[in-house]
Amino acid sequence: MTNSVQTYDNQSEKPRKRRRASARQRSEWRDGYMLVAPALILFVLLVVYPMFNTIYLSFFNYGLTDARIRFIGANNFIELMGDEVFWRALRNNLTILIVSVIVQVGVGLILAALIDRGIRWGKSIARTLNFVPVVMSAVAVAILWQLIYDPTVGLANRFVSLIGLDPPSQGWLGDPRIVIYSILVVACWQYTGYVMIIILAGMQSVSQELYEAAAIDGATEIQKFFSITLPSIRNVNIAVILITMIGAVKVFDLVYILTRGGPANASQVMGTYIYYNAFTVNRAGYASAISVVLLVFALILGFLQLRLSVRPREAA
Amino acid sequence: MKLRFSTIIVYLLVGGYTLLVSLPIVWMFLSSTKTVRELFSSPFALPQEPQWSNFAKAWESGISQYLVNSLIVTTLSVVLIVLVSALAAYALARINFPGRIAIYLLLIAGFAIPVHTVLVPLYRSLNSVGLLNTHAGLILPYVAFGIPFSVLLLYAFFLEFPSEIEDAARIDGCNIWQLVLRVVMPLSLPALVSVVVFQSVFLWNEFSLALIVIRDDALRTIPLGLTKFQGQWSTNWTLMLASLSMATLPVLILFIILQRQFIRSLVGFSK
Image (cartoon, rainbow over all chains, first blue to last red; front, top):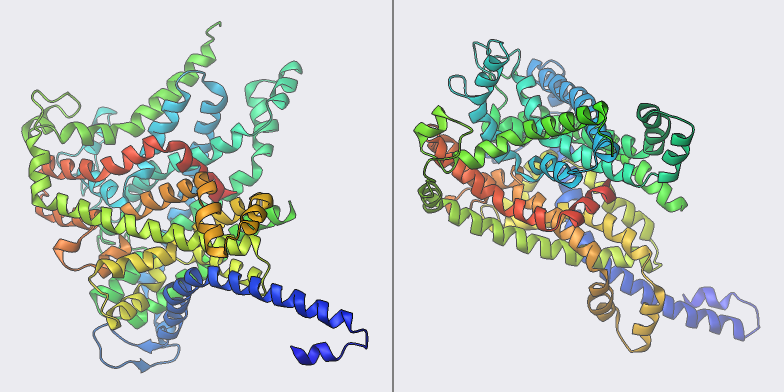
């Protein structure tokens, strides 16, 4: 510090001022670091370090109860490429992602539009009731739906009989061809209200004058929806789609409680397959390799969401 | 106002859909007060005689302990999350120090990391420091994983904090801790409440980490406790549903009371 001050010319005033300013600045810096430190230390120890540790462990043959770990290079990843269950899990995540985006965002958008502009009475009660599943724990939701899906006396069977269809003979969660869709029904039931709430908040900030002007021009409600509402909440829609996609990549609780990934791995997703390998069959190294794949997907989606959320605010 | 045909259709759509979505929850609460026979014979009828004993039985079978555990873990975690996140968010938003932007980006990038990708290293670390199967071993990762979202939300709020108040506090001789803890935080209650509600609901329901950290039955949080009943009461539906109702009621009540703050935190998240 003192060295750099001496390089200034002979005007004795200048370095002094600088030194004084920098002393105050340094005490301010110290305050900043002190305040950030607790969060930063916890975060680095319990999130950042484990993340790199996962990447490291993915190159080892290692189980949680093993005393030693053995470096095996990229073998876990090579095995992964030929592992049918892994591909099934990945495909299931993708199915969940696509169906969730279409159903949750589609229904959430329509529902929000109807609540926002279609009805006058009961707005807040409709909003609240549709949101209740969101605050329930996924474990409670999954157990509740396990009873609803009961193959002999469940409500789901009664419901389809009521509309004149036959319930699936192997049960809603026992048939490998439909199990992932049965889980999706539960996921959509739980999270559509979440999408609806966020979109509805976006819609409520659209200027009423736009609608009034359109009404003078004789626009119908449907025309207003496509030419005013949708363009005005474009960013909200993109954010909601990304949030839904991130949720689909992360899904674990619902699948774990409803099926444990079964029957015969038919409903395995990356989250449950990681858990299965690490904690059921003692292959933590292999689980770490799956985790790295999941991490890549999650980071890409997270990065997209951050760009979306940080940019406008910094510009503003 | 003239009642048009299209208006009626819209009401029927919204009402019908909302009813359909509510049915499973209505069924859950109704059934939890019935006898097993009633539950199957008339699923949507009111109970002939409310069986409050279902709740009593579930309460005694361990739900009370799980609720207490969840209350302890959630409360301590949320208090710590709010404290460390508020301090960090304040520094990042109001103090100009080298590395500020890098730290901010690092902290909020963390929200993209799914907890399942770090279960193995967390299990190892907690095991090596003897925190496996303790509430502290659950609380610490909860706090760490709660930081990104909370910092993001509080940072946005602190950016707009009036600097006149800061200056006045400085002139009164406040040091930085007093400034943040006694002046800034009390004046930022709306933002803090949003964080508290969001994190409380999230942590009350958290399952994945609890599943790997907690082994002892006596330490289970409510979602983990419910999984025990899943096997034990697979045929005793009324007790199972009474347990689910008891696990849901606390967050439901919290949500209904603080609905506005909760929704605001979600909307802030999506912006």
